[in-house]
Length: 214
Ligand code: AMP
Image 1 (cartoon, helix red, strand yellow):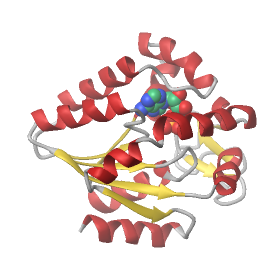
Image 2 (tube, helix red, strand yellow):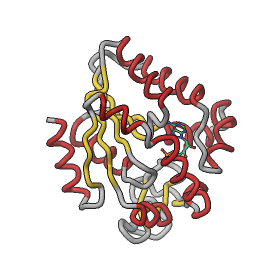
Image 3 (cartoon, helix red, strand yellow):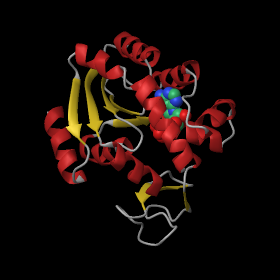
Image 4 (cartoon, rainbow, N blue to C red):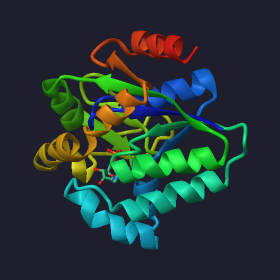
C-alpha cells in the first residue's frame, strides 16, 4: 500500500491536482473534505457532528476524521496507491496515517506541498463554485463552467460552499496557519516533503508532480 499526500492551504489546488493526477496515474483519491460533505448531505451521524465545525471553517475533531479514514483504508487492498487530499491536517492525524499505513506494509512516500501566495488563495476560494450533485469544482473567472450555474460534468446545480464565503475563508486560512502548517516540519524531518509552486498553469504543475512521483 503506497501513499502520497497533497498538502497545502485551502485554495492551494489540492482537489484540482487530485482530479487530474487520478486520471493520469491511477492513484485513489481520498479527500476527507469530500467525504464529510457527502456525510452532511446524507445527514449521517458523522455528517450531523461535522456540519457545525465545517460551517465556521474549524477543523472537525480528530476522532471523527481518524475513524473515517480507517474505515476507508479497511476497504482497500494491499496493492492500492492512495492520494490523500486535505488529510492529515493535525499531528494526531499524521500519526494515525503512519501507523495505519505501517500496519498494512505501506508508508507515506511523498508529501507534495502546494505552495501558494495568500492573495491567490483568497481569489481562488471566493470564486470557487461546486456541483451540489457530484462535487465538481470550477471558478467563475479562472475556469468558468460552459453554462453559468451548471456543472460541466453532470449538469447538476453549481453553488458556493458555505465555507467559501469570505468571512469563513479568513478563519480557514488562520486554522491552516495555526494547526496544519506545523506538519511541514514533521514531513521535512522525514525527508518526504517536496515543495512545488501551485501558482502556475495546471498542466505544468501536473507534469512537475508526475516527474517527482517517477
Ligand atoms: P476541504 O474540502 O479539505 O477544504 O475541507 C472542508 C472542511 O472539512 C474543513 O474546513 C474542515 O472543517 C473539514 N475537514 C476536512 N478534512 C479535515 C481533516 N483532515 N481534519 C479536520 N477537518 C477536516
